[in-house]
Image 1 (tube, rainbow, N blue to C red):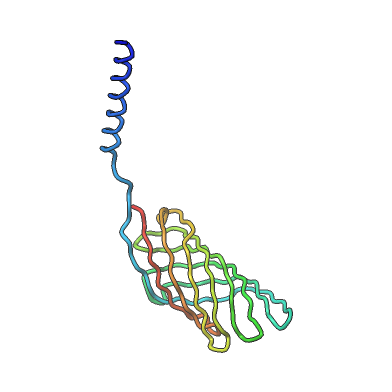
Image 2 (image 1 turned 60 degrees about the vertical axis):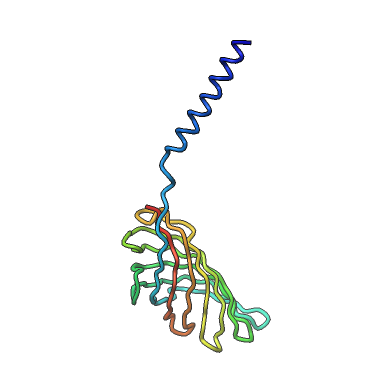
Length: 165
């Protein structure tokens, strides 16, 4: 019995020591939430189309130039797919890779976005989600909304984000 009691005491002491060590560990790093809003210009660089049942299917690539106004600067490459339905409504999605500066840090961010709107009203709106980042933007989390004129590619954005230190 004494041996069992010593083993039990050693085990309890070991658990207590581990718990104490964990309580002294540094808390996980967290960034400060921030908002970025401004404008951009989308320039399609290539696209292909096909039609079916009165709908037009578009697949393409484009370049977005940030810092027309706002805190995001850099150039973004996009790949997109969307449909213009016969009633003029638009829906689609895409991916983006941006060599950007955001919050004073530079790197590459990756994002997915969705869009919908109308060629009749010349409005496209959508949601963007940051899916990853590297370089000085590593640890970036967030996303936001955007709206743009379909005919000109002029748009505005509002992003909520956190940059982990």
